[in-house]
Structure formats: C-alpha cells, structure tokens
Amino acid sequence: MKTLNKFFLTFSSILAFVSVQPALAQSETDTTMMVNGVCEMCKMTIEKAADIKGVSKAEWDVESKILTLVYDREVTSLEAISTSINESGYDTEFNTASDEAYKSLHKCCYYRDPEVVKTHQ
Image (spheres, rainbow, N blue to C red):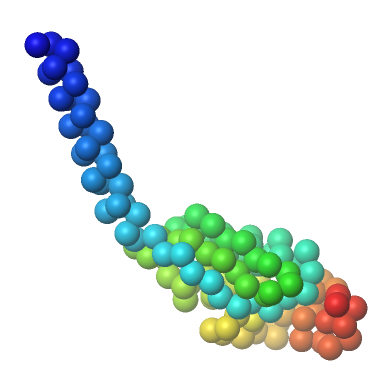
C-alpha cells in the first residue's frame, strides 16, 4: 500500500508540475526585429543593449540584420528593448537612435555611412 501511495504522490507531483509549465511559458514572447549594423562589433553592442531585465535571448545576425528575441511580456516590452538598442546607437525598425548616440559608436560601425557599409560587404 505504501508503494501505491508513493506512486500516486509522485504521479500527482509530476502532473501538477507539467500543468503549471504552460502557464509560466505563456508570458514569454518569441519575436524578431530589424536592427541596423554592419559588423561583429555591432553584434556585440546590439545584443548587450537588448539584454535587459526580462529578455532571455537576444541574438543579432550580421547578414540579415535581424535580432531574434525571447522576452517576458510581464517584465519588459518590445518598445523598451528597442529604446535600449537606440540608446546604444543603433536604429531599429521602430525607432531611430539619436545622432549623439550614433556618433558614440566606433567609426567602423557607422552603418548610416555608405562607405562604411560598402567596406563590410
């Protein structure tokens, strides 16, 4: 009888854990956004800027200019992530970085300059 009780207790615990997992994951959002940049240095800066509280994944692709994100909607927003990236000097599909923030980038990262973009192609 003790073995049967242990079995039901273990089974109930597993069932409760499995049923709670989807509820926890519902607040996570998997999405992408376009972010301008040209090189691996840009990649490091963009990913660091996107790594704010509530973001569990931020991965920028140099070639496609796409930032892949997984974040908790209850902790942060796409707007907050975009703003953080803008503050680091990079334009997103939602907002433009200030000229001051852009000019703080290393000159090899001046993605608005056609000559710099050409050298990275």
